[in-house]
Structures are given as C-alpha cells and as structure tokens.
Length: 118
Image (cartoon, rainbow, N blue to C red):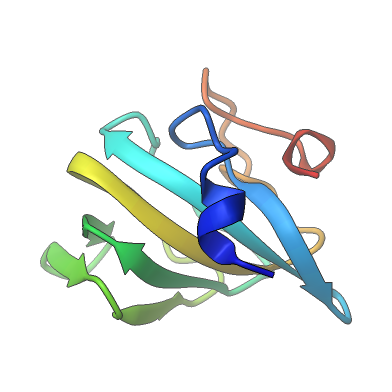
C-alpha cells in the first residue's frame, strides 16, 4: 500500500478516508486546510495524529496551541476538547477506534459518518 496513492484520491478537506484496519482500529488519511473543524472531543476514545506532509495547528483545551510538522505524532486523550487547522494543505494519518465519531457529538457541515469514510 502506498499512502500517497490513497491521499491522491482524497478530494475534500476535513474528510477522512479509511485506508486500513488493525483489530478494532481504523487507519485513515485526510487533507486539512482552513479552520472548519469545530471544537469537539471523543468521550470514550483516544485519537492519534501523524503528520505526513505540511504543518497542522493543534488546539487542545487547557494547553497552549502548538504546531505539528511532518513526522510529528500526537495522541489526544479521550474526553479532551480539541480542533485542528492549517493555513496551507496538510496531510495527516489518523488512528482511531472504529466507533470514533468524526467530530464527536458535534454535528457540523464537515461531519462525516463512519460509512462515508469507508
């Protein structure tokens, strides 16, 4: 599998696509640009971010915002409000439980169901 091949098929920002699964976990790729992700959390699940290309501004409740760069990896613990944005296109890999809702319990214009991510 070539991750860049999968990323080339992602046509919308903030729209993760499942590229694999390991036990009860999905591996996803997404492109991020702009500030469309709402503040949200995942009540019962951690979420892992790996930066494949570009820079991602990460905001997490209770912490100063920080920038993630290519090669950086970060895990948001369950229940922590967070959001991400990027001035220029950024490519990310997400590792999430299969039950993880895209934007937690917050519904917005960019929210995708798990079925839409498959």
